[in-house]
Length: 259
Image (tube, rainbow, N blue to C red; front, top):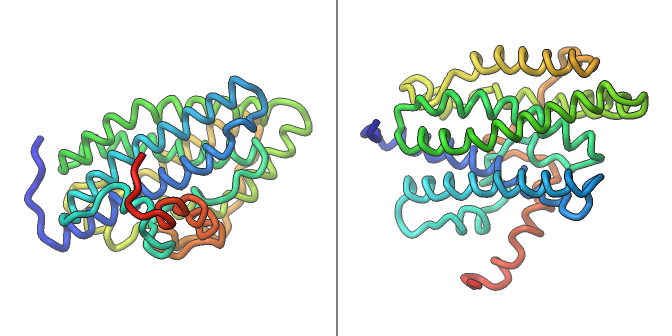
């Protein structure tokens, strides 16, 4: 497979899409890494840290590709540390605070169920580099999905308290899950030329995966509700600004410094 020759408008759309993928993984990875040293047990503390690092590793590959598409002197570090809140294109789901362990598990499960399906399809992308990144990332994502699904089942089919708390987490975070399947103009363009899959097709498969796990966990799927959106186009919740202020502080305070 070779990279296709693409029109300038398509290249801009592809760059924005790659940034969306990278930003989502970066912000979610940052959130997960906040658990380091605070996990409920040592084994899961390490698991959370490893998942966070996996997401950051995937982020690097995506930012490197985005920098290549942008051209000029942009680097992966510029894209991570020198963009403002409105320039980030991550899903709103990824920037939600960790809450308790159950809330973190639900957030991770909903995302990884989607990510597993997305990467499986992106392996077939007509864009060779995006397909290669997806194929490599899928190996880690399969583990992330398995880990988070097992915890949903364990907490849902556990004690009365664990079931009540994880159900509450599902009900609260569900409103952020729909944005994954609401295509932007860029995504519609890329889908029409075979670079990315149809999000409507992914939604059906995602719902089936989530329903199956919830059923095994004896948890209830929330009723239809309004789905929050905006993250893909740079409109975020208040949480992202605080995250970026902390995450970008060193690079902005001491520009260009290296270890």
